Length: 193
Image (cartoon, rainbow, N blue to C red; front, side, top):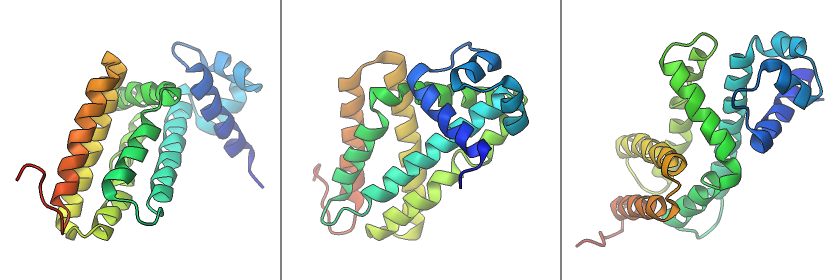
């Protein structure tokens, strides 16, 4: 059975995806969820606490998508990366992506209620991406470096896409990254050679 906090969180994730939160107060968000602001404070501590939990839930869902993509038999690493990029750069997810960058920036500035986002904003992604790299034949060290680089490239290009809306240029940059990643895999030759 799903507890009340999880039900509220799930509803909040859906609400943000559909409406965003922008400058909405906690009371406005609560009304949109069909609950009270007191209930949100009880479960999440503050608006910021709710937003951090929404981001963590969305990120967990994205990691599940990545794990599911890894189970496609016969698919190349590049094709898997392209499908994942299409999924996470889908305009339907942009409200969640905007929220991520907004709260991430606040956490980096030390805004109360947001700093615990920093606890695993990078590390939660590294282990599953490292495992994928190792499964694709990279050494553990190369997989670690590549996982961190891939996370940085992906987040940077998502930010670029939100800021510029230049889908063609951002997709071309991601494609170049994917091609360079595939070229370093064992048994592959560089397209530049």
